[in-house]
Length: 236
Image (tube, rainbow, N blue to C red; front, side, top):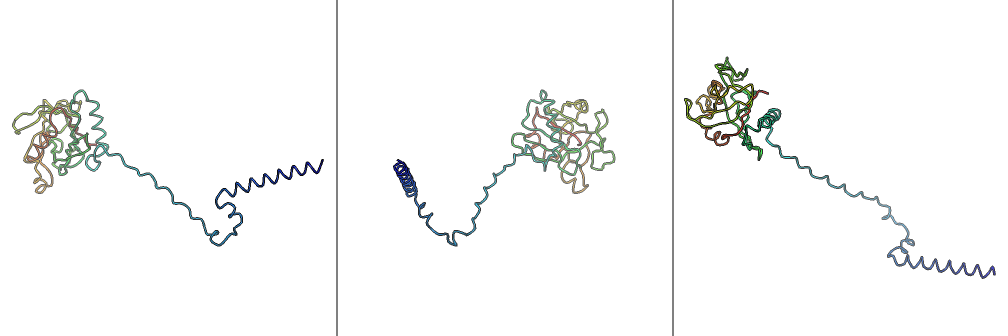
């Protein structure tokens, strides 16, 4: 009885081992691998796979070039545009006058808010803002008769022909410039805002508070600004 039981167990082991060998033989190279001796080629260092390439980062396109309009000034201009939205029906372009820059630098920036491009022009400040004629704006004033530039947001209004030739009226939207219309603070061209003033005097002449641009720039400024858009003037 014992011999018969052991014989059955031995047959089961033989069958099991046979199936295992058959399965190994069915996998190419497995049996050979168990029988092959290791060689020097098997001992060569394993080369690490190359690291995956880092994903390419594409910077978001700036709404305007910081090389032209300083970011802090641009943020203030955009805040003013939101604050006075009901008074500014056309919001595709704005003008920003950077009165922290000297008059010898192009500081009247026309900004296209749809494509982020900017174009800059020379612009004057008022004689009352720079009594010593240094080329730098020293102060703003909203007072009638001050001949000074005033700060804040302006709505560009209609065109007319006055003592300075073709001009554009401006409506002051802030307490710091709400006398602009009565003071006749406008956009116009002037000889003392031409580029040759920089060569001969190192600065532009002064207006009576108006945004005077070069005579050759007026058509471009008028075409880009148009009525219903905003001018923001500040010294930040």
